[in-house]
Amino acid sequence: MKLSDCLDSDLKRALLSGCLRLHLGALSLKVTSSVPEFIAAFSLLYADHPVSLEGGAFDFDLGIRPPSVWRRWVRRSVTFEFAGDAPFQPMEVGHAHALFEWGLNWAIASYCHNQLIIHSAVLERNDRGVLLAAASGSGKSTLSAELMLRGWRLLSDELAMIDEELNLMPLARPVSLKNSSIDLIRLRHPLADIGPLARDTHKGTVGLLKASVDSIEQNRVAVVPKLIVFPKWTADSPLRVVPVGAGQAAMRLIDQAFNYSILGAEGFKRLVNLVRNTEAWEIEYSSLDEARDALDALVDECG
Amino acid sequence: MTYSLVAGLLIEPLPDGGALVFCGPTGSTTLVNDEGLRTLILLASQGSVSFDSECRNESGLYDSISHEAVSFLERSELVIRA
Image 1 (cartoon, rainbow over the protein chains, first blue to last red):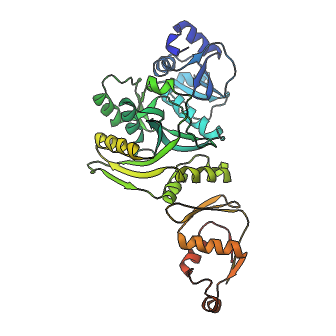
Image 2: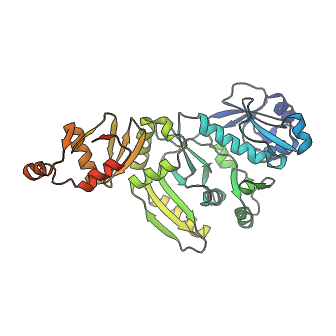
Image 3: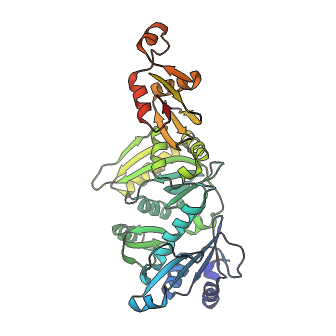
């Protein structure tokens, strides 16, 4: 059942009692919280995701909770908990939903070592998987949001998960928009569902964009990668699209990989297979329309 | 100078030239060009190689390998014993 099919009272009870399971691609997450601000944002952003309210097996035990009693009197804040531990400092209650996403990214990158995990958005069009690999601040989430809202399927705006068969594993969940990209996407897509803004975070203002229904419904369908793109947003830059050699692409992906060194030779083999079976390009742009058109053309032309 | 490679190198030539090299002992990955690849293959196949000028001139075996390639490999994180 979808989260939006649940009665509010049932959902709150399941979140409070630890019986809620959020099904996110191949992962099943136990999510626990009693924080009203988090529950409201979670209900909006994950409305179309499958959940169950009867407990059961889970991969990760995640919680958003008020911190210790004395801290509640200092400032209203929340803690991200992973299996009962709090790996991060508490944050303002208004950041709870962003903290959940960051905590989930951390959990996946720290524990899912059956996958090669690269800091990259992943999208799909015409059954062709596309990695948008770049460091934070290069505009990949904004570009991912634009592509998703124009009909591309989103697999992730943050983590490319590559299995031993070289499949890209889907993990469609909210897209993390930052600062001016929030208004940009709102202007271009007035009907887009963006959750409450988390202001003054260490990344500035964060707005989470709900994943498209189509992306969520295909969250168990893996995709074969065909294209690696290194996007770079630069103010006032004309569109520049240049090929990247396989070796250079591999070295750039290593820079963005979370667990390459942990996987050792297996990670190397997976990476070599990836760059041998894909084309790699660098796109520098200032116009989202131009970048989208260029990506459409690259996807159409790749094998 | 005689060079040798430790065991555990994975060498994967690439379709557009050069190769990716994974060094098991250090876990590092290095991108080498065609010349570096030839040098590595030579090192790997011979076990150890002595790059003295007399040998280079007489046998012609190392004609395609420059000191730059050897120097690059020495500076890389591949484990090369000199």
